[in-house]
Length: 140
Image (cartoon, rainbow, N blue to C red; front, side):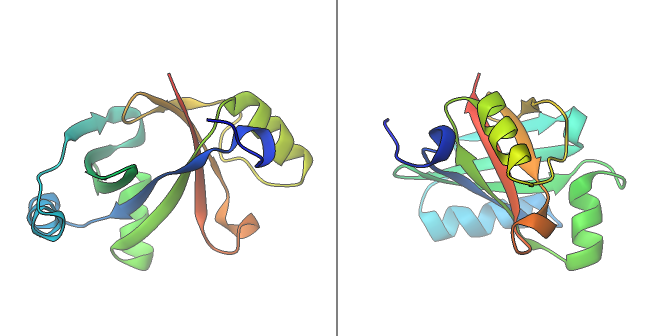
């Protein structure tokens, strides 16, 4: 897909929603969307269990902590369940990282890390994006 957005930002890839309890959230979103999730996956390095729903080209990712020290557990303890991040698909994550670092954004890691759904990911600090955690993700 060609894009006129900076450095290959293609589209909103998914919206991540932090949940306290996974099974009731799966039931709620299955009812909401009229279909079960298409994928579930644990990302041990992030301390998270993910569940993906599809609606056309859009995706919703439910995120549940697998341990009390994970970023999701800390997010829920501080803010409660709800929208955690917005993820943007990119063509070249390293170029995006360089571009956004040059523009003054704070990257939460110095290199892309493995993420759910066969992606390489990096996050931009929410202090630089008006309170929204931004995830950049590239297909592996």
